[in-house]
Image (cartoon, rainbow, N blue to C red):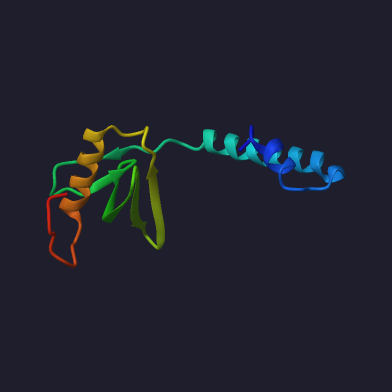
Length: 119
């Protein structure tokens, strides 16, 4: 977004007197979000052998849910009354790690309907 902001805003028929301010604002917001994301602490996800629950930063997570949307994986769980999530981009996990995560979550999940095929 940071690199494309000038071209996208120029193509939006924004008045020329507002274009410079809009580009600077887009760059400032984009840089602030980039700094915020780079300073966030990294989370560690542990996949112990199945009767033990999955762990994120050493804390057990109960009832994990994994949503597969094409190349993205989204892991949901409850932390007390808060709903937490982790998004795995395609370049973060290789195919073996993706399958291991899918199997680990499905081994601990409660299914409402029977599976029609293997995960």
